Every structure is written in structure tokens, then in C-alpha cells.
Image (cartoon, rainbow, N blue to C red):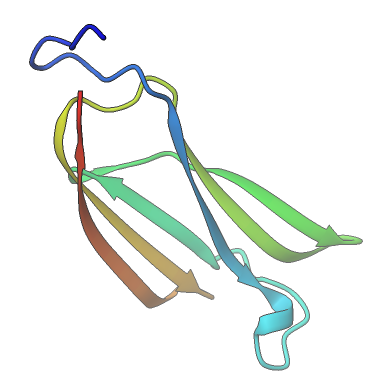
Length: 102
């Protein structure tokens, strides 16, 4: 298998799917607010997320946040920082460094 040159992106597509929150899991809540969300940074840069919202009529009841990396990332170590917000309040953050091999 041909190895990419240093600095060249790995051509392995991947995506990150994160379940934000379900109204069913929130105490006495029947809908998710607009400020209930997930944010992702990779190497200090914010990543644009697609949001898949499940509704019951006109009411949002769950959200799935999706980050797509169609071109992959360069070989080396990359820092992923995720933050979960419920009604605008930070409730959880996760910081992971992952090595990508070319």
C-alpha cells in the first residue's frame, strides 16, 4: 500500500455522530430547546455540524449532530474537543487526542 507523503491528508473518510439529548430523558420536559446542542472542535478549530432533528408534530424531541470529514485528516495527532449544552448550559465536555496513521 502506498504511504502518503508527510503533510498529505489521509484519504479515509469518517464522520462523528453525537446524540445530543432526548426530551424523554429530561425531567418533566416534552421538547428540546433551541440552545440544546453539541459543539465540536478539532485542533482548536470549530467544526460545522449537520443536525438531524426528530420531531413529534412541530416539537423537537431529539437531536443527532453529525460532523463529516470526507477527506479525512492529515497523519499525526489531532485533538477533538466536544461540548454538550442543555438549554444553553454546558453539562459535559470531553477532550481526546487521537492519532491518525497514514
